[in-house]
Image (cartoon, rainbow, N blue to C red):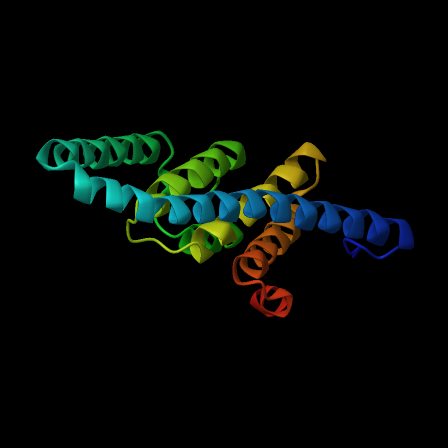
Length: 177
């Protein structure tokens, strides 16, 4: 029985793919965290504006929240795998019980997460970061035309990189994998 990386060149290619997954995940999560930080910095100014603006501005804010809820509902309707934290979905994919359209989920999770978390809705950044990393891992695997066994390794590496980036704790990502 031949293993995935039983010769030196296979191990190098697997290592290079893992580095690509880690760097790609780091870049996407850096953008995600930057956007969330930007929205957190903007929120106090928005609250001050709402307090000074009166009933009409408050009504506009309520309309904005309803519009955001509608957009998030449309995102989930178009890509159901983007709902929730993302960790159960990644587990289901690794167990072979689910499939993920990585690019659609990646875009939906990043922009839906920014919208939801940015407006102060109840969602942390850790779960989405894990799923975003898994999307990057699956994407690298599919773009490099790798077999399912390597795809699972890249998914795991991406999920661990996402967790490490979310918590700024590289060792936690390794242990998570």
